Image 1 (cartoon, helix red, strand yellow):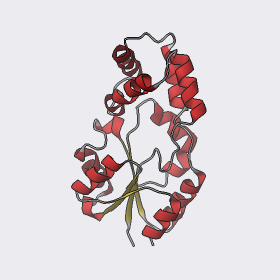
Image 2 (cartoon, rainbow, N blue to C red):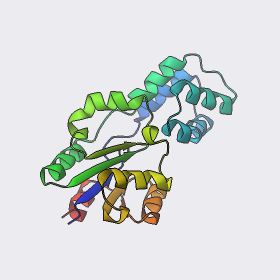
Image 3 (tube, rainbow, N blue to C red):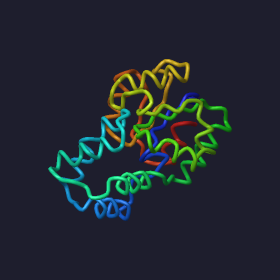
Length: 195
């Protein structure tokens, strides 16, 4: 029974962007399609590692050779698109904490989103022994240092950690630093692997 469990946030505990949220971002940006989303995600590593929101959107615009008509509204729509959680996973986090497990959160997350997410979901975030946000440590997964910092903040070695993430490259990177890592498929999987 693993005592130290670390979760990714988005795609595991928090939900990813809905189609409606994606459409809203595209409408405000005045552009859509693969080129827009390639630029959105291609510029994201720096944003996750602490870049300011306006600078991120300037980089996205530059990559597209475009100009966004309302950057503050675009920032707001983007932040709103990342604030929902999976209630079943929230309940599972509470259960694991009640059992006395040591819990960590290792998330690629932008700086402006942290206070908004914490204000909305503080009850579940309070159950974690360490909240490790890429924007605050200056590196994002799959950088090996992100996993090492998380283990350090939990007071354990990477080999003591069972880590769940929904992205293959992050699982590979976690295993390379010595963590036991599993590609997230759902709460049933976690319940089975933490018994």
